[in-house]
Amino acid sequence: MSSLVLAQRHPDDSARRWQQELSNLITEPEELLHLLGLSPDDVSMPADVLRAFPLKVPRPFVARMRPGDARDPLLLQVLPSAQESDDTPGYGFDPLSEADFNPQPGILHKYQGRVLVLAAPHCAVHCRYCFRRHFPYQDHVPGRQVWEQNLQWLAGQPQISEVIYSGGDPLAASDRHLAWLTDRISEIPHIGRLRIHTRTPVLVPARVDDNLLAWLRDSRLQKVMVIHCNHANEIDAEVIDAMQRLRDAGVTLLNQSVLLSGVNDSVQALADLSEALFAASVLPYYLHALDKVQGVAHFDVGEEQARDLIMALKQRLPGYLVPRLVREIPGEASKTGLL
Ligand SMILES: *Cc1c(COP(=O)(O)O)cnc(C)c1O
Ligand code: SF4
Image 1: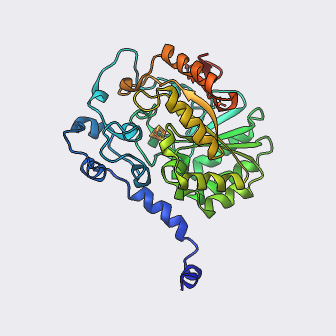
Image 2 (image 1 turned 120 degrees about the vertical axis):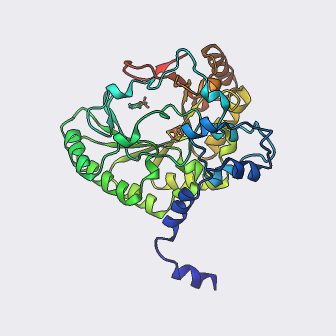
Image 3 (image 1 turned 90 degrees about the horizontal axis):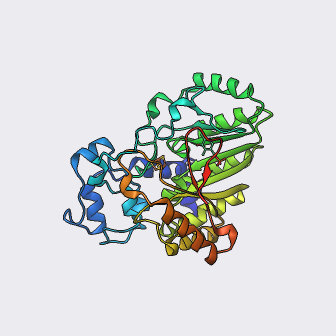
């Protein structure tokens, strides 16, 4: 009976599952609180903050939060806070000066040999610490016509060997679009690597379906995926399974996190994260000091404390499980190590 049902399934069924997840996000504060058994007295979500950067969180991510805990490390990453309205000196609106490194619409070129491509305008989530929360994505995500120009531009940059899909979140885009883009990029002989920076496989593991794996596996490019995971509790059995399938498709898996006050600013949390990542076949890559964008100051962990955390982590873990502590400084030729 069940095999008959399976056999009759439409070939696009699995694709629809992740798309359903992404169109069925939690955007109402009341629903989030209800699901977690919290009351409006436990948390404050001011209307002006919600208007400026609405609540947006996928259900599979909420399922990994601890019910009844207003300080849950996953919840804190998506929970709007009154402190986002604070006007903090030293915090800007384009802290990375990204507007200065825009040779083509949808392309950011800051570092030698690699170029960042904004492959989708949106994310499956609104992370409250997001460094691009003020970035005008809609002006920067091109249609196919502009892509043709971008591909031409890329073909004329022989020093670039790696294309990085970024966003927004590139995996919010359809596989049809990504397969097309990847195919066209792979026709450029000097491009050897494709890197995908994405938070979606952790948020919505169903995104890692056969359609995604097919174009990844088929591409001649070497594939690297950098997942954005900040806490061990984000990694459940479904995420581990998704990582396994990516690895089987020939994708090298790395993680980058942001050091966030209240979320992962302890040696224990960072050690647990590295262990959980490795158990899922993912190696830690970067631990980012927070980019100083207005509205996120309450997540900041001082550089002194950040260094202490990494020093302590080094004593506890093998070197390959210790992420590089970095900050992005506009105008520098790479991320800047803080240790
Ligand atoms: C961070 C970043 C990269 C990638 O840097 P790596 O050190 O290679 O990980 C590339 N381009 C831009 C614009 C970036 O911000
Ligand atoms: S996934 Fe990244 S780009 Fe998207 S909201 Fe979160 S931090 Fe910002």
